[in-house]
Length: 85
Image 1 (cartoon, one colour):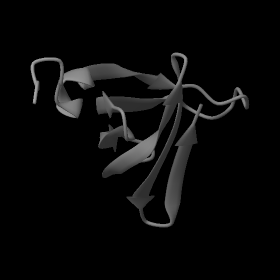
Image 2 (cartoon, one colour):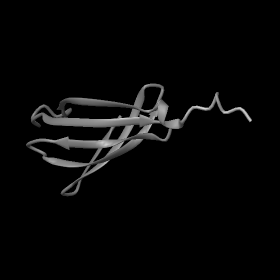
Image 3 (spheres, rainbow, N blue to C red):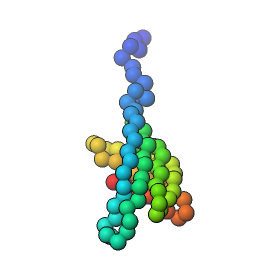
């Protein structure tokens, strides 16, 4: 039995952090600061998200990654759901 060619699935995972602003299509809405901490692996994308004023919230993030494009979802609390693509 040869096992030298087997690599654990966790070796394909990587982590990334992003910080920026969510900008609404409605110009009268103020920008919302956002911080994303992500881990991408064969099972998908997971991590944490935090937003600042005027829409403060934090939550666990999950989603899918395909060819460099992520589809992310999170419940930020206070009846606020975040979905980004």
